[in-house]
Length: 173
Image (cartoon, rainbow, N blue to C red):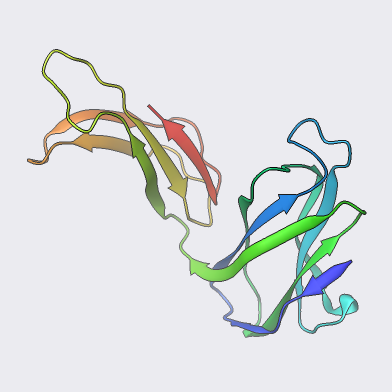
C-alpha cells in the first residue's frame, strides 16, 4: 500500500530533511512477531510509477507503544515540485504523522535536553546528562558540550570522539 503527498517545491543544490513520526503495530521493539517493512520515496507525480527515488528502505522495524521520530535527507538535481511517498511493503499496520520537509545545513548541532540538579553545591558532585542532536546533513564528530554558569565560567566539558550520524541524537554525561 502507498500514500503519496501533494507536490512540494524544492530547490536544486539545497539539502532537505523529510521528517516523520512512525508507530509500527507489529509488536514491541526486538520482540515483534510481525515486523514492518516500509520505504520512503520521492518523484514527480502522484502515481506509484512516478516515485523513482528511494530515500530510505526500512525492514524488520517494530515499536508498538510510541511514535518514533525519523528523518531522511535528500537533494535534487533540478528545482521543481516533488511528491513524497510512503510504501508499506507487508501487511503490518503502520501509523505515520507529523510529516514535514525543511532545508538543512551540513552541520547543525543542538541540545535537545539537559537533566540534572537545578542548583549545584560546592563539594557535592552532580551528574548532568545532555542530549545532543545532529540536525545537519552530514555526520559530525569532535564537537564539545560545555556546562557553564551564569558568568560563563566552564564547569564541565565533554568532547566527543565518536561520530554522530546526521539526523540523530546521543546522550552525553
